[in-house]
Image (cartoon, rainbow, N blue to C red; front, side, top):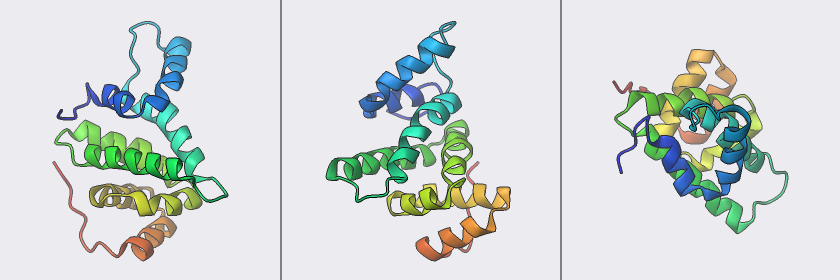
Length: 151
């Protein structure tokens, strides 16, 4: 299935059923009117806290946690490669910008990031003026000399 802004939340829930309870809770508390949660809200309020919790863990990840992170970031990379600019915008402004708020979380996420996700992360960090995070990304992922902007 091709990812687009209309189906990206459905695809997140299908691929990551562990988030469905959180989705239903958010839906019941805030979004009963039309029965859906917009993508930026779904990723910001549901995926991000779950993801950040995994990436902040102060112990070795279990095999199941590591596998879940591979699945999550595989999906994020698929989003980053989408032809839909709105889907890519969710990756950069909602997911990667939030991960960049905490350098430990960003550093722990690096080993899971796909190539296009790294590019979007560098773009958002540059736009926020977070030079420290750009150094982390350059140091740990190799310096990407030119960031390609997808239209």
